[in-house]
Figure 1 (spheres, helix red, strand yellow):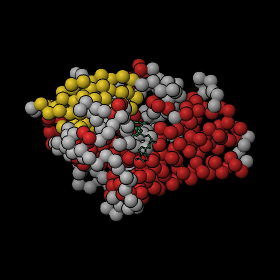
Figure 2 (cartoon, protein in one colour):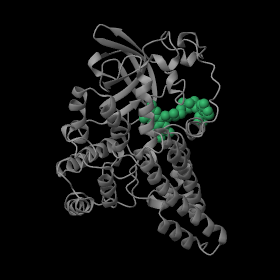
Figure 3 (cartoon, rainbow, N blue to C red):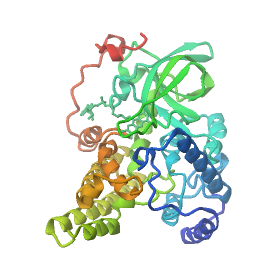
Figure 4 (cartoon, rainbow, N blue to C red):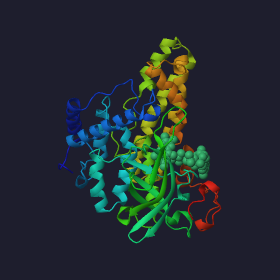
Length: 426
Ligand SMILES: Cc1cc2nc3c(=O)[nH]c(=O)nc-3n(C[C@H](O)[C@H](O)[C@H](O)COP(=O)(O)OP(=O)(O)OC[C@H]3O[C@@H](n4cnc5c(N)ncnc54)[C@H](O)[C@@H]3O)c2cc1C
């Protein structure tokens, strides 16, 4: 610990004073999560916001509030999840670098902390905490993202370096990220889970071509990458050769904490505020439409509020039980499932409550636009961070002990039939 004992209340009071003096207030009308942005940001606006995030992260670092649960030797504060939770409460209402919490801190920093060598941790983690390195995830492939163990991007050893070939897709912020975690296949002659290895690599690596994908809502934050003879030194391998699945299970675990509960995330989510989904905003919308006395409207408002409260309680309970060892780490699938479906439902409820205003809006009506765009992109919360269907599988098989799904790919991966998209380099 940076001090022998820092009482959580004392820490929170110190944070309150520091935040008031050092961090800008959040603009409640703005949703800074790029995929939801009411007016589709230009590349220049995204880069400007990324620069702001780096600067805000640096301020948190200089103030002693970055990496609250990260060991001091890597630049953190070596405090406890209770201190992080207190800070997350205090930072509500302030702008903070929400866009780099995922993927830089979860899962990338969390994975480095667990599997990185001392040299890798000392090299990267302080830079992450100072906002100098933004990390992204090169995980999903065109052949499928749910079956991460089916990755066909290959890594071939060449002395003390590796040569990577293949392609990745749906990389959030890939075009402005600095470094990445990348899953690749190193052994084609064993069952699929036993032939994977994880690497770290700079997004500027020669041979790594990045293409932005334009979504139907105009967002261009997702990327696909083509790796052609990308050279990675063995020193940048994360974990043992062919033991990448051990790294992956923790990588996926940290990804699932996207719905809350991670000790490495500041602010507890991607949004600085609930915006149009706030209870007061929903009530205000129903008042404006004159539907506030309808029983159906009241039921919808009640449902939205209840699911927010249940999610918070579920995250708290599951996080506490995982930390105490009374639930396995697979339990993170529960808040991930509830968070994903509740977010999608909340977007649908808001669209109903805002009426026409949530469907047709003028460019200056930021809140209405957030409702409409939030509705269009609502399924993203059931897909990003692993789909809710996969979370259901984890809950059924790993927590409830139900029979495992039947598999047709238990042979050496080389012999597993694959479609043309997923045929890989070998
Ligand atoms: C907001 C967002 C951010 C993302 N960021 C990243 C990122 O930074 N890096 C990255 O690598 N990827 C990222 N992704 C991609 C994401 O991880 C994948 O989209 C996801 O894992 C699903 O993979 P897929 O799209 O290939 O669908 P598929 O795996 O092809 O699945 C298609 C459908 O089949 C279902 N399905 C598949 N297998 C099973 C099964 N065994 N049982 C039941 N149902 C099944 C899935 O649930 C899904 O509904 C992001 C996605 C979103 C929406």
